[in-house]
Length: 337
Ligand code: AVI
Image (cartoon, rainbow, N blue to C red):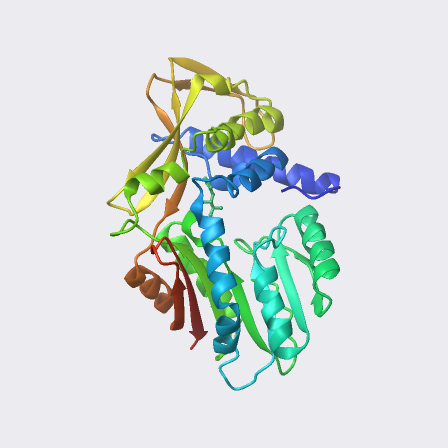
């Protein structure tokens, strides 16, 4: 979500980043758009709606794991040695899922300092207000930052152990290489003994069909389709392009080779789209053939072995893991080694 009142230079730099991304992605032989482009104001609202869809099991399953195991997770994170924890959350958004963990931290240690990090000042303002109204033992210290590009702005409190939260399967939207780099960046800001709690969506299994996965990204109400197409509306608004989003079909596919759901926008016709010139480059005319797609998102689905390998590659060792009874989703606690 964009900041409530971004300074003009912040708006310019966002538009420049949008233009650079769109030009690079849409002129490559296989057209792509990076998933961060989804999250303008309308896209952020659509994403919140997705998390409440009956087909989108991820959010409510992770929440149910927290509800069932929050005390155990916090006890493990404190190492059973009564260490006092401070919680930092990457991409916290409105922190809707974090309340259960914060309540468990307050039960355990009486009070807790919570540092949510997000690019959206608006979302952090909501997080701060909601938590302070509902959880009196929590001190909230918001940090507006893009943790994917900058070093993690960790405000280390002397004598406290840090529990870093990266939940909601956000790690699944990064390529394996980028996911490793991101976790290495997190690890670099932690001390040995600090912890990471990672939420990951799981791949198909005996109780989880590919149909379940596909439905989560192709819901009956069309909310995910609207979320996907909204990226074209954003390019029209931010860059002055002339996409007709109705001439692109939302597609979600399962890629078994890479264990990921892919989202695409498929051109319904032969069409041309104009990208006006700006600070990122001269005017362009893009051509789309019928059936050609713009690849807009990957959402990687993990096996327990893949979670372990990813964490190990960033110098974390698993100390606990929890999942729902249908093995839809996993929450993994890892120690910074
Ligand atoms: C934010 N992220 C974890 C979501 C996901 O499931 O990959 C984004 C999303 N894309 C379509 N629906 C939800």
